[in-house]
Length: 81
Image (cartoon, rainbow, N blue to C red; front, side, top):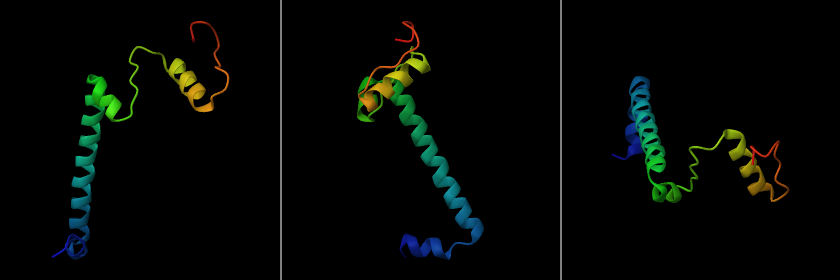
C-alpha cells in the first residue's frame, strides 16, 4: 500500500498524530542544523549561513542591506561601522 493510500485511510486523529510527529522531527532537525552551523564554520558555509556572534544587530542589518542593494553603505556613526 502506498503512503498516499495509507494517509487517506487514517482517521482525523491519526492524521493529526502523524503530522505532529513529522513536524516535531523537522523542528528538531532544523535546531540541530542551526547549532551545528554555530559550532562549525564549514557546516555554516555548507548551509549558506554567515554567523557573526559578536556583532550587533544593526551592524549586520546595515551590512546585509549594503550587500543586497550594492549601493551606499548607510550607517549612523563610526561605532555602527
